Length: 269
Image (cartoon, rainbow, N blue to C red; front, side):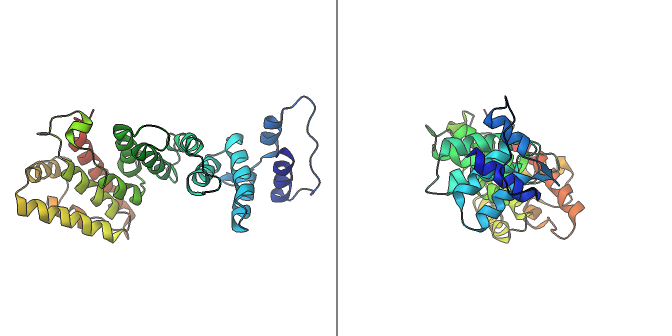
């Protein structure tokens, strides 16, 4: 393994194809880190992993991504290794996937952090490494859709999974008078809609139309929250308000949705 990793680093950085000599008194893990070099906003082993994936060698890709993760220059290697552990049937290891995704979800990488939180949410929701943890799944999926970073940058698919997985009041240990799963799902679909996912816009509209037909109590709460966060439209406009063409407008809208989400879930746990 060490030989492969060192050879990969040499190829990617344009060095001699000969295997580097391990320094005296340096462990294999330490040598791997020494052989990995920063490359723009990634690193040499991450790039080697991409090359291996393109040629269909998942095992080599995993080894390279793990080396990148260990080197610690950035968390992209951890994320890609976690995806392989999660998605590749032959290499599947949910516990390893969970560990890698926890590292990425907990990082300040706004590009892939929300996506890692989504995978964590699925792991906890489905009990892939133990008993299902509904509360923990809700927390991680909330980070994927709303709470990972203040910008906010999100994972729209994470919003869909969150909206389809809202716990009931008993599961969250709160009073059903104040916990409104359909309202929370509506906000999640509206946020996902802002990620250029028109199907989620339609899902949000369906929820709102159903709520109007049933005179759902949460509509009044939504109207109050819309006013409180300074949204210019009405509750029903949330699923149509995001403009993917206007970055500043979209991000301002998302920040208002985050504020509404905080208000809607402030009694959780």
